[in-house]
Amino acid sequence: MKKLTLKNIDKAIKTAKSNTYFENLYRIYNTIPQGRCLGCTKCCMESVQTHFVEFLNIFDYLRSNRRLYEELYPKIIRYYFLEMVKKEHCPFLDKEGLCSIYQYRPLVCRLFGHVEEEEYEESYKNVLRQNIQNMKLFKNKYKILLPKEVLHYKIDYCRNFEVDKRIDRVRRQNMIDSIFTMESAFFMRGLITEDFIGTGLVSWFVYTAFDMEEAGNLRIQVMKEYLEEGDSKTLSNIIGKQKIVV
Image (tube, rainbow, N blue to C red):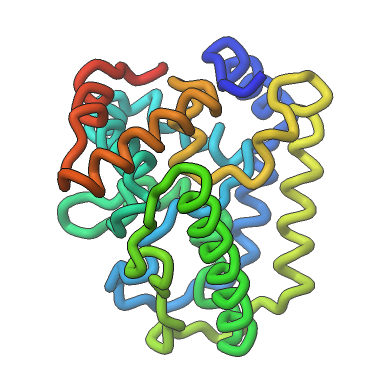
């Protein structure tokens, strides 16, 4: 299974609630020291890796706030299909630059600023290496030249974020491990498969509407159209016809 059906999402949410996974999630979140942020949103330029239980928490919130979900959904779809050819702010930001799911945001967002600069630069180098590999893949397999400004885009290390004590790598990994331990219940019940490990927040929502392979093929088509014409009729049709899954 490479698509998130509403039936399985509902089962997963029931599993999470009956096992108090959402409460456990916030127990982990609440151990993270609150920092002082200027709110520049320069760090909000990626679809961050999000655990399934975190996605369920956000999905459950948006389902109970349908008007907000309907506002966000076209932005989410657009972001997914153009992510590799155009840098844009996270689709969950509102017009004022505020996070519309701030109380429900995933662990990666909450931990930003808690990494020392040396480790942060090391992580960027790994991301850049992966981007270069992707560039070669898209060039050789799909005849697509990914824009250099996207490939080499870097969220600069934030020196304006102030926190009394940063969380070290071991403690951060322990948080990730604790969340992943909860995820095992979903794997055991066949509600998700290993294909979904490492999925970004935007992609989770896209996979409620599209199979992974279908989404990937459509994205190639959209990327080609956008790079050749500066726009994509395919994307416009997708956004115009696609309904949110609730």
